[in-house]
Length: 188
Image 1 (cartoon, rainbow, N blue to C red):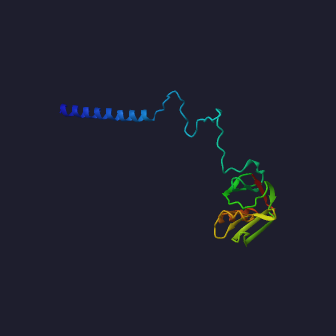
Image 2: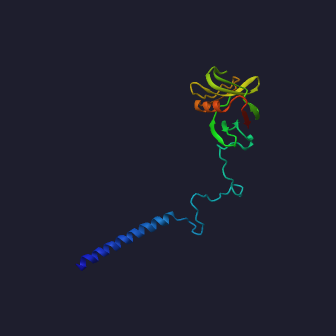
Image 3: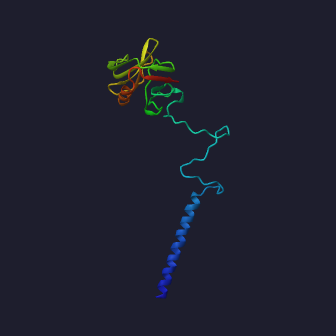
């Protein structure tokens, strides 16, 4: 009996040594090269260094309402970003979405919604809905709209068009939000 229990203990000891060896190997493989580095708190990132040597600024949230767009309830249209924000009275975006710009662009500035049409044919010949007009540039009316067929193609650069196109669901939301007299802010 003593013989079988000593073999059993020897087997357990060998298994324990192997397990400790495997765990030690795994720990060493995931250990940092410099053990003097401070451990990171979960959910935080170590500051990074920019190429100029100074601390890198946190990345700007591309979906954040542009700071230069004023205050209060408004529609914000960023020309360079090809994006629209519907902003409530407290300055919080209730919705944001990408758009396909027209060939004629409004100048940056503040406008108001001057007219709306439920369904018309666009200057490009496409049937559109929920047209919200707010500016006129180069004798072309500028406004938001959605193609009834849901398309948002790149406009023909040889034609002067003022329709800023969006998906139908986004057009529905903008139609509800931007009534006559609503503020529209265009930023570069």
